[in-house]
Length: 148
Image (cartoon, rainbow, N blue to C red; front, top):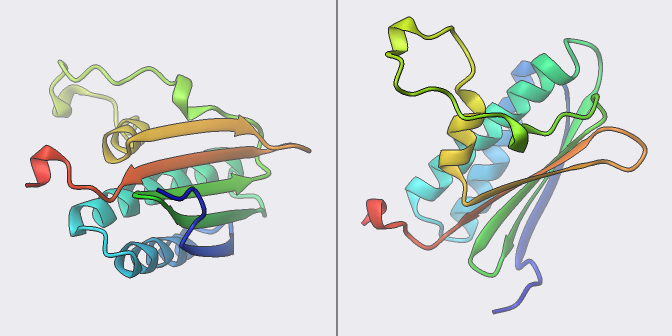
């Protein structure tokens, strides 16, 4: 298994919720191009949507900025890297939500990072040199048992 990406795309979008669709489209393009199963592509699209939305809403707080995304096939893994220049925030340190509380009794929000964890095989964060964040989301193309 080679560690060199066989498929790779980079895209930079302004930190605007309307531009998250461009990121989702790039994830679909890479997933389809590397013949990933639909469930894998759907999971990654959801994870990227949640991550980018959080960067825009809570990182940049509506101020100008950019999100740089790289999507690559590395062996059997699709690796998505999102980079920003927002204040450092590590989503991997956020506690999981209390799922014993019925949804109608929970405070709105707070499920995005949980969904990102469920949709990926790994999620890693590091502070970007010079300021900001680098979030790496990895998902194998190999079908999970639940996917048949």
